[in-house]
Image: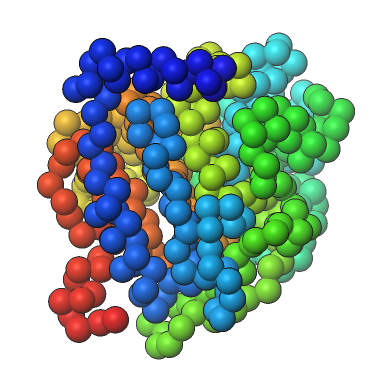
Length: 393
């Protein structure tokens, strides 16, 4: 299937070069990323670009740890909340097999999720995957980070005061979201990690992908975590990998290289329909609710370059630039790691990035690449020109 798709793209390129012309300047991108990786807040970074359905660029920058070996396109990082799109993909696959339905209530399954007023009897899988459970954002994440048992935490959510009716507002979740892992395990009669490996990772050829700390640390090349508060001087500080968000695998448990993340991104563009069908993608990528908090942050930091921020199932959907082109993406962060994915499914073009520090600078990579894809004027979304102008490193 992948060979046939590649051959088709070649034929189309020959027949209609304007439609599939390469617009991303990879030399400029490499120069920009080299400069970014030299910033004192960056330890390691890997970036891949898919253009017209093909992986045109996949490179590593910096090091896996200070004083350690270089990052390559096979270096494994944590994907953090990009894991939510993986969970949605798994549920969409099971729905396509008629093994569950998005309209099924949480109470239909043997999960540990309990909501105020018995809300688990009203909340559907669609509500869980779109963060519409009516409870405060990131409910009890701190309890998880303090070592709490996710099943006990999910059970204790019943004691919260509702902030809206289920289905009517978006409040981002991690512990509650992971109830879908319990659903997947019940439906497939297998461990969540095994189900995802069989449904997604192996069929897509994602050879470095895994869902636990052991998988990360057993990788031939893996990036160690580093953090730094914005106002701190000096290099980022090394951290120890912990199990906190591995214990909610649907919300934040996936590991993988940038090469594997690019393969996954291609599938989300509809380029591997035998794994993720058009029906499954429509199910996941159709917006369910406007996310005012996300839009406020984008407007403040990025001058409204992305508008109309909405949440689908494990995915965010935006209108990009003045033309309002539909793009899909997500970002992720766990201690010492960050990630992003952003793509235009109509153009089969997008960008993915992974880095092992708490720096926000690489978030701008997504904007710089997509601006190139749309032939928009270049802007310093990474903030490296401003840094140089101010006399910084």
